[in-house]
Image (cartoon, rainbow, N blue to C red; front, top):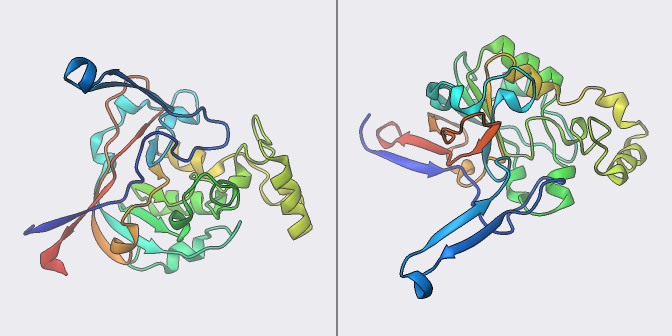
Length: 253
């Protein structure tokens, strides 16, 4: 590899970042600051499942690997950033993945650019109206044998297959479920009967996943590059905020 350029695929982390519907706000306190102590030292209280982050298998099923148990090579390697534009509540289907270019190969890290990262905000649109993956896509990823998946939406599953819909502790947003029925004529459970099937499908099959991918994603979309986005070595962790990076060999451009 010759001269390389790094592209940040992360959303910033900090005070008042956009949060998934039932998470407590990020709290940052200065325990020491320059006028007081001559140094700056801060304490952060946060869920690890905010901004750009990686889910660990233990997040979704008992007996799954915790963050500190996952091999580092799961978060590093070659892969593709593919454009799969989608609108409100649309699903990313196997045919979308099969037709994406550059072609998704076995062992790839795959970043999916639906365009939704441009809507990243504390909004109903970003968290509740996003497109997403569902069972069919999860099955495709397992059959293809990819290493890791990143999405530029709120989760590794369609929002109506999460607790935003009538699943697990949900529905967190019954008004959104009613809106779906009004627009489609169908109940959410008719189209999304399973709770987070893509999460479960990939993480139970040793495929890792990033959520809320953003930053310079557009600049590497359509390319085969090297990705790196490591979680902290958190013992018994269920996930981790990451600094996700695409590494581009400029000699290949």
